[in-house]
Amino acid sequence: MVKNISLLLVCTVLFSCTGKKQVTTDTKAKSADTVIHVKDAHTLSNADSVEMKHLNLDIQVDMDKKQIRGCALWTIDNKSKAKTLILDTYDLTIDHVLVDGNEVKFVLDTQIRFLGSALHIPIKDKSVNVMVCYKTGPKARALQWLNPQQTHDKVHPFLFTQSESIYARSWIPCADGPGIRFTYSAHVAVPKGLMALMSAENPQAVNDSGVYNFNMDTPIPAYLMALAVGDIAFRQIDDRTGVYAEQGMIEKAAWELADAGRMVDAAEQLYGPYRWGRYDVLICPPGFPIGGMENPRLTFVTPTIIAGDRSLVSLIAHELAHSWSGNLVTNATWNDFWLNEGFTNYFERRITERMLGSSYSDMLWELGYQDFVTAVGELSATNHDTWLKLNLKGRDPDDGLTDIPYEKGSHFLKLIEQSVSRDVFDRFLAKYFESHAFKTITTEAFLKYLDTALIKGDDDLRKKLNINAWVYGPGIPANCPRAGQERFSKVDSQRNKFLSGIPAEQLTTVDWTTHEWLHFLRKMPATLSTMQMRKLDAAFDLSASENSEIADLWFIISVRTGYSTAYGAMDKFLSSVGRRKFLEPLYGEMMKTPAGAAMARSIYGKYRMNYHPLAQESLDRLVLKKS
Ligand code: BES
Ligand code: ZN
Image (tube, rainbow, N blue to C red):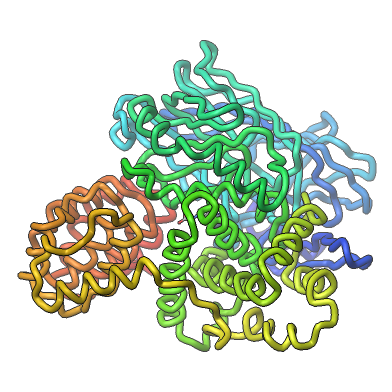
């Protein structure tokens, strides 16, 4: 590894290792002839000068050493005759680099906080093949290595990656910006008996050799690179959909996801053809840090969606919707994240409406609105992080990962839909996906497209939408739409009955879904007594809930009200669930009192190792007060 002296030398030549250099990515909106150059502050690469066309990955996955070793062979087009190719890396050891078969001297910069180390490779005008041979390090932020004890079946180890937003560079040397697309093929060797899966064409059975070959011939950005290795089984759902899970989980998983094929059909009816061939879902082990990840062809999800009643599958609708918003039309930089997540949230609810009716999707809208209000409250109403267009320069893109891009983004689209009529908006969106397919989009390019393809000089409409308040302003705009309350007003009246003293078992709750329960519990007053908690628990067995969303909220309320009967179940929940969305609020609630903080430290001490490296980072700050 080259440290400061040579770093200084290279810096003077290339001006590129301060972390300040930014890549520009070409983005072209169909309606505009001009190319908009976009600065992406989160890649150190120079993919604006050197086109990264194809990746041929040849790796071995060492489950004992918890290390990936191998070579990444990049096919490049040095269109601007750059002298150097710069790639992103994070905690990688570079063994050697070959350019068109000849070993070259490379320079690996010292690490810039979350951005990692730029790798400088000398290239010639006509260079085509750049091979980087490397090993991953123990701090690889994309990799979660599970020992058998941390899996569902507890027999074999498991590995999965989570590359969004800038973690692909911790397992592949690459140009790691959402605006940089490439195709890939991969040759992956894993311990015999285990299966390997990627965001590509996948095997459906374990093979004897432990060697798997993959192909993704549709260009994708690095954050959609994904790999999972484990004792995995497959079940077909229909011709183009299926589910992968650990052996002991596969039957339950297949039952829970039985509607996935119909969801793909519903999505296509809304916004045009599904362009990725198969749509499969991998149920990850419990330590998976998020709800789901839209890896192309193979969504990765948390096992916490397996509720036994198909009530949490709107998360699948969400990840599926990314096959259009995100994977097909991709946010140019992480500042434009709402174009991925806000669109997807909107699309998710439209799929859910088709599948389960509008009174159902209205519940998702209302819970989302509540999350929006909470997020604005927590961030403060003037915080720039409550704008749709974020400013993450010099910051970890994870900082922008709040409910704002999701909820403010989707509510903005809902407002447009209501203002122009659903038919008109649906046609606009279908055209947007088609005309921007496999391209990158900035907020500005989207607004321009909106203007030319939809607003078309209608000043009344422009005034009604008040776009600036949404995109370049904080908080909740005054014209924010609100969903119908048909099912939730019934929930409100049951809650009021309970609060006025009517016994819990006399409440009408038989046909409630997860969402009704969430609304019922969310709006309980903070002053709920231990006695009231006990009555709710006796009537509805909430401490024993198998539904992770309900359980998490119940435990938060239990901590808030000091209902210690639930603590045993909460301890068990925290031992296995790794989803940050559940962990952070629950540990956060405990941290509010000295006794709670002591409990949090004791529980976290026991289970820290079960959590993903990124969850550990944020919980170390929250619970252990590490900076
Ligand atoms: N793409 C996101 C996950 C993500 C975003 C990972 C940014 C890392 C950085 C995914 O589609 C997502 O939004 N997942 C949600 C579930 C969804 C139903 C809101 C989650 O994990 O909670
Ligand atoms: Zn998403």
